Amino acid sequence: MKPLAFMTLILLPALAWGQRDERSWKFENRETIRRSFDVSSASDAKKLLVDDMNGFIHVNGYGGKEVQVTVEKHIRAESNEAMAEAQRDVKLDMSQQGNFVRLYEDGPFRNHSRGDRYYGYHVDFDFEIQVPSDTELIIKGFNREIEVKKTTGDFDIHGFNGGIDLEDVSGSGSVQTFNGKVKVAFSKNPARETHFKTFNGSVDVYFQPTLDADLRFKTFHGAIFTDFEVNALSSSESKNGKFVYRSSHRMTAGRTGKGGPELSFDTFNGSIRLHSKAL
Image (tube, rainbow, N blue to C red; front, side):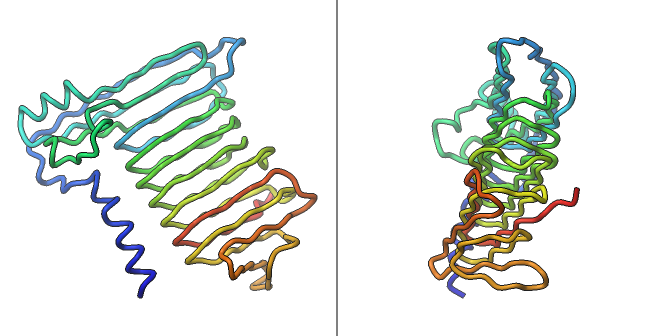
C-alpha cells in the first residue's frame, strides 16, 4: 500500500497542474499554421528545436531538404476577454538561423507557475513536422505525447505528462519523461552514450540483435528484463527464455557483447525491458 500511496501523491498534482475540464470553457477558437524552412545549406548541420507547453509533438523523417511544419492552434476560454488575452499573449515563435529551426511557444506561464484557472484560458499547439531524416532533434513537451519516426540524427527529448515513442530511429542522446512510458525502437544501435528515463512508467527499448554496449539499470518498483546475455551483473535468472536481472541496491550494471557505449535505463514505478528486434 505504501508504494501505491506514494505514486498517487506524485502523479495526480502533476497531471492536474495543466488540465481542466473542457466542459467549463464557453469560447473556442481554432487555427491552422503552416510553414516551411529550407535547410539545404551544406555549411550547417540540420537541427530542430521544439519547445511546447500543451499539445502533442509528432516528428517524421523523410528524404527532402525542408522542415515542414503544420500546427493546429486551439484556444479555449471562459470569456471573450480571456480569449482576447490568449490571442494577444500566447505566441508561437518560429525562426531559423542557418539550418537551425526553432519552434517555441511563449506566454505568461513561462514566468509564473499558474494554471488555467488563473488565466481563464487554455491554449494547445499540436505539431505535425516533417524533417530531413538526418536532422538533430531537441524536443521539449510538457503535456501530451511525443512521437518521432524514421530519423537518423542525434536526439535530446524531454517530456513531463505524456509518453515518448521513437520508432525506426538511429542516433544517440537522451529520452526522458516524468509521467508516461518510454518506448524506443532502433534501426541502428546507438554509437554513443544514450539515456532512457521516466518516473511513472515502463521503459521498453528495441535494439538490433547484435548489441555491444555497457549497460546501467535502475528501478525501484519493477523488474529488469532483457533478450541479451549480459555479463558481470549482481544476479540473474532465466525466465521463459529471457534473462531477468535483480539487484538489492536497485541499481545494477553489466556488459553485453564486446561492450561499447554506455546505455542507461532508469525508472521508479515501472519495469525495464530490452528487446532484440528481428532483422
